Amino acid sequence: MNYTAQWIPYEITNAFSKLAIDYIHQDPALRPFYKYSPSEDGILQAIEGRKLFPQDRKLLVQELNRQYSGISSGKVQDNIASLAGNNTFTICTAHQPNIFTGYLYFIYKIIHIIKLTDSLNQKLKAYHFVPVFFLGSEDNDLDELNRINLNGEELIWDTNQSGAVGRMDTKGIDRLIDRIEGELSVQPFGPDLIKLLKSCYLQSDTIQEATFKLVHTLFEEFGLVVILPDSAALKSKLIPIFEEDIFRNTPGQIVNETAARLEEKYHAQVNARDINLFYLGEGIRERIIHADDSFTVNNTKLRFSASEMKKELREHPERFSPNVVLRGIFQETLLPNIAFIGGGSEIAYWLEMKDLFDHFQVPYPILVLRNSFLIADARSLEKAEKLGLSIEDLFKNETELLNELVIKNSNNTLNLSEELNQTQTFYEQLSNTSGAVDPTLTQHVTALGAKAYKALQDLEKKMLRAERRKFELQQAQIHQIKSALFPNGKLQERSENFLPYYAKYGRGFFRAIYEQSPGLEQKFTVILEDQSN
Image 1 (cartoon, rainbow, N blue to C red):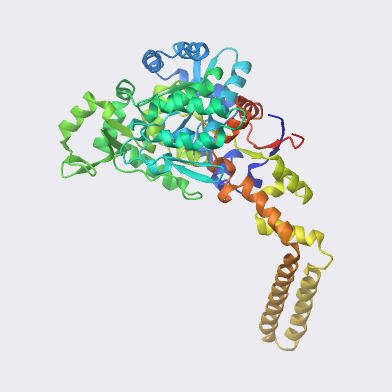
Image 2: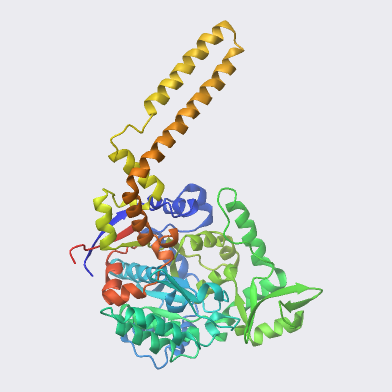
């Protein structure tokens, strides 16, 4: 893949929340909600804190070896074995099992942890760092996970299954793969990609297994370790926390108190429930509800007394699934983790969890906003250059871009700022003159001035609208550029899938993202395709 890259501040994109921007800049208002800064010093401090936690490394390695049984990959196996050592730590990201990875940021998150891990292994030789992908396969939001956008078309896996998506079988996905094959097999790496999708999805019993295989195959050369937390052995480590959630509702109370403080300035991402666990069964993942001295499972006939619920939890921890409130503390209990990399909304809800971690004395990780990219195709770049648009201009809305273009290129005067200033000065002087005669006239003159000023502003807008009609070709070109780079008005990474890029560039696409991925530096990256190709 031939390209160049440019970097811009996140705030220029107009696509990230105030909380995310403030966290990047380490705004003092957020300081009470996290423990370590995303810096090399923060990494070293987090390591010292993590050393004090009684980590069950033996269980972790045992479960990972079980999950990777029959899979041969030297670098991954070496990383798993290294987790038994007290000087090995993880850098983690997490995501649900979207079919075919869902959105581009799924890939960006993984490459970010790989890049940061490699950087730390080069700088901090006394320790070893392992990139870990925590697969949230128990998510039951099928309407979000069963679709991808491919070249402007939404492809949906149609299934009537219910419950945890990761536990669903892959029946019917073959039709989607056939549809993808018809479009991408003509690309240089398309046939190999289709072969990979068929191998992962059509030779797996569940979505969790298929996603595990796909992510492993795509990133095994980097030593990425994928962990499947849907495990009785792993969940058994959380039984005391799960019991406190079910019987005393402590986690929800703590998180809601923290969220209330955060919401004094920002939008709270999560509102905790009394019980933050789902009950998992065949075809179900439903909330556990406490009522009338017993526990029921929403939308089922299942009912447990307090003693029966405690027995169920201790004998079958695999039947209990944490929601967003407990998922992070589950992850950080299992892994010797130093840093968590997530998107803006993930950073927002993690900031609500610090007090919960403190309560249970679980190390709180460094939070790092995941890297973001815009892949600017050569055709769009060529059109933008002809219009005189800069990279920063691409993030402006279409109306703003057209207005600036019209003002810049029009032969007519469209800016009435001088006249507006003159009008304001005139009415200020008139107000002084009339006020000397009768002070009550000042308010009347002020109202006249405001009316005249607004009339001039409206005239300026009408002049600009009239002039814009002469720039219909440029308007169409701007629309084409924005539609190509920001599908459905969103950042590309929140709409498109990695498949067409991989079909075109193969692993060269991953290599380009890896090479341009910042580690702890926070900046938005624009990848510019080489226009000479």
